Length: 191
Image (tube, rainbow, N blue to C red):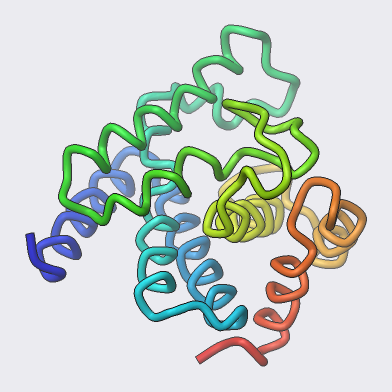
């Protein structure tokens, strides 16, 4: 499959996501843009930066199978609900595997909910066990989720999101990635 075929496939997937989840698909576009710009800020190759954009687009594609009332739930999820949400990673991986998107996307997708201290999911990976692309995707995803209207009622002011990221840099999130995000947000890492 050519690059154009991949973009056509991503467009079809996004169209389906917009129909199914509306704002969640728009959030994926924001995550993709942030991930790409963070990768550029970190000096990664054009290929890796392109893969980060694609990974951002499809990172939560498996959420299409999770009931909307669970995704939008403001209370703590019970074990069954948490399992459904966590299963979206496997569904996203299957979707990528069924396409001819770059295989390198799989590790970033599989690990983007892992955290440096091992408290993430699905495998509780720690530190450098988590690939850089996943660490970038995680920071872009968290920033977008916490500051986006895609999560009604849970939108935080940008300063509160910054505080969360700073307080957890080196603990949950890669410090260099968080620093790069702040440069991107200020416009020094944008196109």
